[in-house]
Image (cartoon, rainbow, N blue to C red; front, side, top):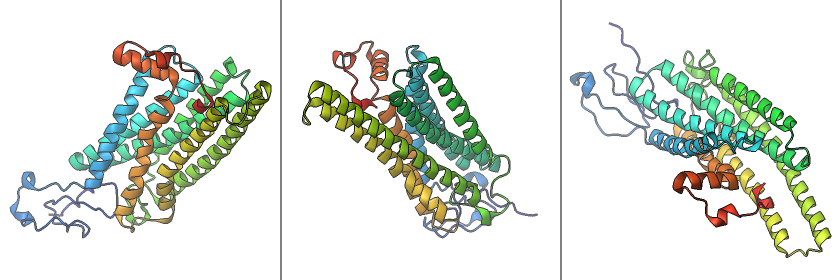
Length: 342
């Protein structure tokens, strides 16, 4: 009777963990778990399941991401006042990160329980689509912030709302297409030599994703530079009108706004750049440890996004206080918008 090869529980190749299945396949050399009893002497129900600790870290990150962003989605969904273009884009970002967190949890569950290639393709597709939508939503938020400053007088017109809906349709449509690629056959299950550092994505597939990220990052960098110029120019004009000096509070808040933009862009780059660069230069023959070490920080971006884009927003803060305790503190209700809120 022919033996079926065991399904890889992790999405990485070579597999850092393995099922001690009755198929008699040798365990990976990177796993050091002591001597196991002879596999032929164990019933299937007695065979141990070896769980990679890195997969547990990813699953834990996914749980935190899902819970945190679910709160943001719930607040925006239930509050009719949060329907402006800015809040729709923040909601899109939170929804994308929520799906990404669920994808990480589902992938862990399917990989170690179902051991099915079909389930693996679906969960990896969901993760690719969700993280792509998250990055695209960050770009859309950057574009929206630039337009709100450059076209300040006409920003609240119906044209802005139509443009926002168009961006949402395009970013989610493109993200869905990217997520469907592994499911529709663009994967390396049939030929392991074409695998990237993230199985079952092919080397070409992840190269396209990485190059696209670098292009989006360059565009965001350019937009934030323009935003900083606009903020500084507005601050200079106000200073001239009111005869402010460099040490006045308005100068301090303007400088804080520019620092906030630097933190936003720096955090985004710090989380995603290591994995992006590594996936361009590495392939499936590289040690899985390097992939996990760069992939885990990338997931942390979805943990940080609600803190930067949602929880710091004054209107969302008010809605959160109403949901949590039914009241809004005076310090939150009367806090004035400053350049640090850009």
